[in-house]
Image 1 (cartoon, rainbow, N blue to C red):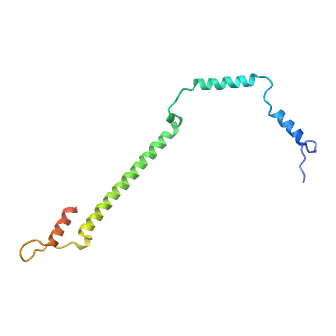
Image 2: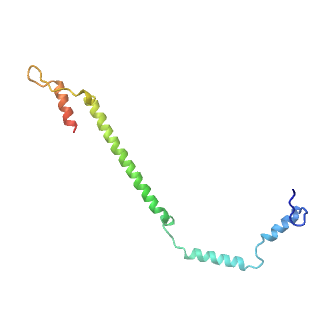
Length: 126
């Protein structure tokens, strides 16, 4: 099946170029360009200097929301890291919590190392 448009003959390149030149040619009189220049200059003249953030008024709410979310995530990560560091320090100092030493006294009545470790454990943990 062959689709034929127009009179059915192929146009030469020169004919196509001439048709396109006529189609896209600027207006014959100068009024188009004068009117266009006047409209552009009026728009530029009425436009005042604005701050850079004023070009994005719809993004303000999104930006504030994203900043608050980022701050909350940073706060949560900081709190979690501090808590984890405290637990690791306590475990390193006292050993695992399953090995809580018992309170005992030596034969001389002086506290021994196990008693001191128990006391340190009780002071540092709630």
